[in-house]
Image (cartoon, rainbow, N blue to C red; front, side, top):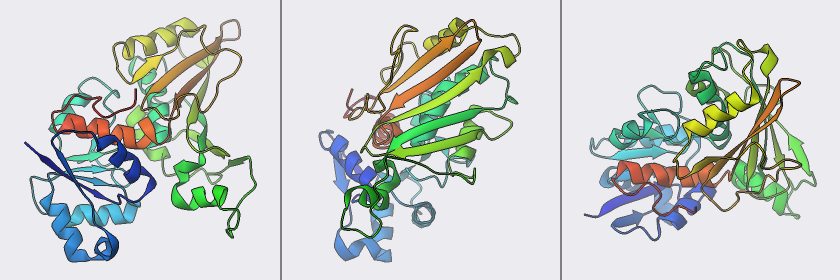
Length: 315
């Protein structure tokens, strides 16, 4: 049976990546509006309501508007924007987040695709909070660096278009200095934290790939968990996962490349610890356009349509 998939915003960075992954999917009919039809309200309404599954690759306000146009109760929606990520009526689309999340994704008709930074952060922190090693009220800091593709067309142009008015020569640029980055509520809610983490994101002069880091002072945690205990919880949590793996405690020492998983839809977690000092640096490596965006959307589409979970993904 053919599944009709409409990608609203198919010409954007994430939309194009999703189309590439779905190109070889059997039983899918991909549709997209071209030219002036993209801004035609009637054409959009018809496309949104005529699909079996809609993927919204739009800015937040446009995604809310598109979702409101869907009146057909049978249409399933994957929203790649930030708009619905903390809405209780929408299912959060991170299959590995907690037990039962896959079943919830398979059963839902309204799914919010996770953000790239939160994917790495939640993979590291949520299991530790759930296991009681990190209290929900503990102050958390997350540092991260991403390739400039994460900022969409405007940021890509700023780094690539030397003739453009916004072209920048920067090598590494930090931002979110008002501590109000739009990903923070998503991190707090889905990690089960009582307080928003301090989030310090940066963008580097490379196209894709990211590192998300959470440093912890283990001596400040109740029970003083060891480096090995932290690693064991993460390793047990993701044992058998096709898209998430936990490196050994001996792997990666010396340096870690932000592009290590570029071009893939995988996520790798590292635990770098100093046992005598009671300190760890927890680091997630992923492709911001892969597991951090398009790869996650296709993974969710597969679950929502009864297909093999990794179909079309780059392993």
